Amino acid sequence: MSHYEIIGDWGTSRLRLFRLEEGRITARRQGPGIGAVGRHAETAFAEAAAPWLEAGMPSAIRLCGMVGARDGWVEAPYADCPADALAWRAAALRLDWRGVPLGIMAGLACLDADGVPDVMRGEETQIFGALARNPALATGRHLIVLPGTHNKWSVVEDGRITAFRTMPTGELFALLRDRSTLGAGIDTADPAQEAQGFAEGLARAGEGRLLSSLFAARAMRLRAGCSPDWALGYLSGLVIGCEIAEIRGTLGSADDILLIGDARLSARYAQALEAQGLSSHMLDGDACSLAGLGYLEN
Image (cartoon, rainbow, N blue to C red):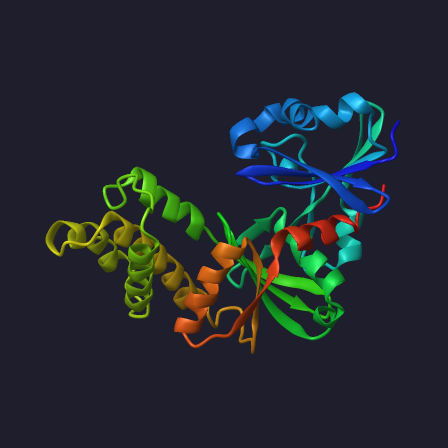
């Protein structure tokens, strides 16, 4: 068995693997998301990590995200909120894979004010990683937003995730872009036009009228000469802006909102938050994932 570990963040859309040697990342690999491989996750993992495995098996494997979902590799449990890093770590699923200790991180579960359940997988790793990298976040109350396919608005109080709300804005946008007459499968090619549409979508979102504003993405192309790039940006700005307008206040106020995730998408959320008078700052999603995975002990 070789002296290296594999840690990975396996979401719906992609797999990111990191090879660790003496605490340093020495190589990276990518693969398809759980949404594409489902119950064939074990095979997909072996294929993605094949160059490393062929040279020698790792001493340990640690994975987080949708790999532990019901339709992933093996279903891992949920830790109930409020949860700190210790409770979350204790709930991890531990297996043996080809003679190697395999740890699959638990998800988190909570109930909203109406008693409706909510769940997350993967985002909690980034949150606890953010707390590990920034000790000041482990005290007081903080509102942390993780943009993605299913955005998570999370409340952290004194190092515990006490509540969160999922907004499937990314999935809605993808459906509008790829499967509706509003988007018609368009993809942006003119960043300036797309940025203008995004700003217009944010402005419309401030009026709080999502459904009545959606069709403008098509009508403005047909009657006002707007480009497909403008329409794509408009749809993005509209759904993100309406998400913020709907959820702001439901989880309480915050002087500064922390954004964790992809830099480009987080920048969009920062712009949308600013349009509604809210301040924010960003942390790198990969760095937080790696720090969070470091919590898991084999």
